[in-house]
Image 1 (cartoon, helix red, strand yellow):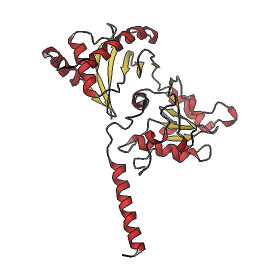
Image 2 (cartoon, one colour):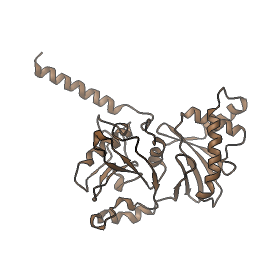
Image 3 (tube, helix red, strand yellow):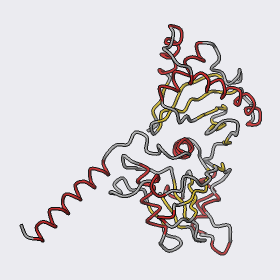
Image 4 (spheres, one colour):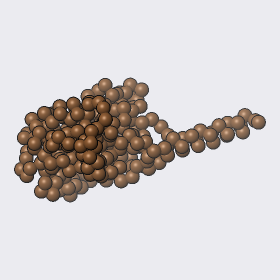
Length: 293
């Protein structure tokens, strides 16, 4: 076999491997990132929010902004003032959203300001967020009341075309607050009702067993404040939801949530099989699930 034929065969094998890699379903695409649960919330639950992350040294080491939603549901944007942004909420995705987002970030990172990357359901092989982000850097979510973060702070670099789309987009935002007494917990008001949605990074069965134990004791109530509705399932993690009394404000949730977080943590840490009442409770807890993605 000649050198050219051998090279062609190797290229074909590499292409097949890349295609297989890109098509492989990833149950928990953001697993391994310390802020996995918040990423899932930004992608599925939180209408308007941003968080500053940092690329690792291999990929330039600069800061980027990860946002819930970008204009036109773009996957990434090199804003006019030079800020690199990634969007979590997009209309299409491959079986591995972590690869999608990483590919879009790298695409716009070294491009001209104003460049954007649309969502791509077939980004091909390449690094994932786990490969390009500095996981030791802080990742603090800031929930926003508007999508004004689409625009540069400096009026000189503002994109007036995007400014025109803001008013309509802002009308779609449901009031949401990130709570501080538990990781990845969000207060939100929707349709005249108030909810607590709390994303869990622990293994799904561990979470369900913990909820079942509390449910069997009549303690799955956010310290008496909420009524358990069920769980969302999204990107391999579970997000329990409780309905709170009308008019409950975020500050009023912090203390009972902090106490309830300790209760749930202890319940999830219990060993041994569930007893009869707990198994019955788990059947009810599990049946009230909704798969988002």
